[in-house]
Length: 65
Image (cartoon, rainbow, N blue to C red; front, side, top):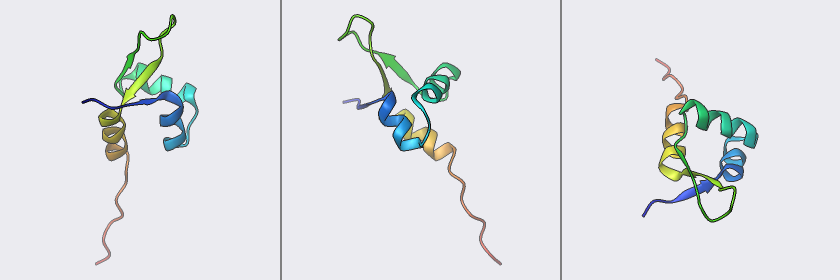
């Protein structure tokens, strides 16, 4: 079963604003869907998309020689 996060949850986890999360969605950096449970629809980001974004943007320190 696919799990989802709200824009607010993603924003809090990434330390950015909800507006920035919306930009990431529009740019295709995060995969999201619009729900039909409200008239306007609420945007939900897949957990897999969030985890993939974090993995792509995590920097690993170089090993000392």
